[in-house]
Length: 298
Image 1 (cartoon, rainbow, N blue to C red):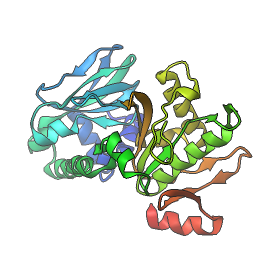
Image 2 (spheres, helix red, strand yellow; image 1 turned 180 degrees about the vertical axis):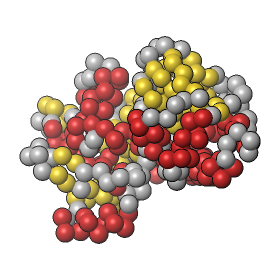
Image 3 (cartoon, rainbow, N blue to C red; image 1 turned 120 degrees about the vertical axis):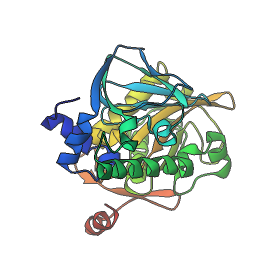
Image 4 (cartoon, rainbow, N blue to C red; image 1 turned 135 degrees about the vertical axis):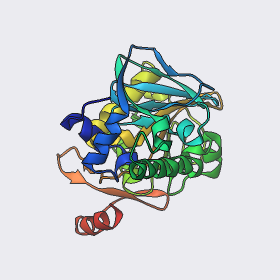
């Protein structure tokens, strides 16, 4: 059992699956929870293992490897393990700590046992978890990168040849980074989407080599830094990266969920801008229109 405190409650409030719970219900949730520490590279669970707990990252980071060799990373405030809990089945992937980390582990059995948790609270949580699992099945993220490239750009798919390299000038270009950030912010503010870096507008796979990062981890770290600086740390929980090999070239795939809070972009002049997706393009919204859009969207 975890003793409720302001920091822990604030962490739970930010988890979409618990957004409908009030503070007393969140405190009840902590009564069926435990804090678990993991050393770097220590596994949390393995594929085909029985699913018994639901997890929220409190400190550190974790990586999930799925059967199809895809992976997702999780940072503070992220929830994982819900697929096995909802299906009352086994784990569909393997997850381990990327650094010394701490998880809040919630007893999955309590969600289906009225003696361990208030039935109304459990119902609210299981409904949200079920929506999440259903959403995965329908989401853009479930479409393979090859299929996305074949179908071409649209409202929820954008191709970028590079993250920072300008082929015309032969130098790194902050305007190319700016276009990347604006695309991600637009996905956050609209319906979400997938950005593929290393793919030309016509679908030709170029790879990420021209960006000249020391390795793929350095590239993802650079993008993480850009997002935190230009959009904000709070939005990182809606964004996931992975490197895939397509046509013998590496492509950086960025999957973006629709955000629950507006994503403003801090521009080079320290002014803020607000972008949305309009068809297959990213549009900077006029100041006079932003308020009404936010009221409608969020």
